[in-house]
Every structure is written in structure tokens, then in C-alpha cells.
Length: 98
Ligand SMILES: Cc1cc2nc3c(=O)[nH]c(=O)nc-3n(C[C@H](O)[C@H](O)[C@H](O)COP(=O)(O)O)c2cc1C
Image (cartoon, rainbow, N blue to C red; front, side):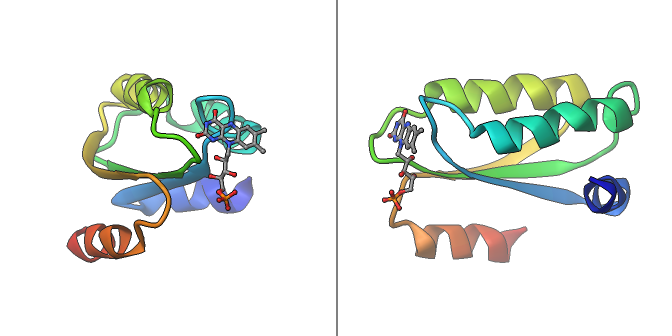
């Protein structure tokens, strides 16, 4: 987690990448995001973020709602998302634009 805290102290943009589990993010990523609370909540920074999520189906509402709520607390700006499997080119194009 020390590596993650350090990266969030200087990064301009964050990429949250996760497979979809039961309609939302994995437990592993949720734990990392929960631990960011101590470092980031109450310390808004001008950061941008994108979400890359694979899933077998096509329902991303609950996962995207999670990211929009979590980042609203931090006043971060969403600059694009790539929901869905097999979208490597779309993800690369988004990465190149960041
Ligand atoms: C515990 C678990 C829960 C999952 N829940 C969902 C789900 O709610 N919706 C969905 O579309 N896919 C779900 N999946 C499928 C994964 O998102 C999928 O395996 C992952 O994106 C990787 O794709 P792949 O298996 O084709 O490599 C789930 C997988 C696991 C292991």
C-alpha cells in the first residue's frame, strides 16, 4: 500500500482496471480504494481518472456508479472509460489521449 500511497501523492491521472465481479469491482480493488480514504479524503486534488473493466455481460451501471460516487467525494474528473472485453484498441487510444 506504501507504493500506492506514494503514486497517488504525485500522479495526475489514475487508471482503475478491474474485472467485474457480481456487478461491481473486485474485492481486491475495493480494499485498495477503501485504504485511499485515509490518504485522500479531505485533501481534494486536481486528478483525472479512467475506468477499464472487463465482464462477460454488458451491465456496468453499478460499477460505474461506484466510481462516480467515490471520485465525487474527491472532486476528480472522469476523462473516459472502457467497459467491456475485447476492447484493447479502445483502451490504447484512451491511454494515448491521457
Ligand atoms: C466471482 C465472479 C463474479 C463475476 N461477476 C460477473 C458479473 O456480475 N457480470 C459479468 O458480466 N461478469 C462477471 N464475471 C466474469 C468476469 O468479469 C470475467 O471473468 C472477467 O472480466 C475476465 O474475463 P474472461 O473470463 O473472459 O477472461 C464474474 C467472475 C467471477 C469470478
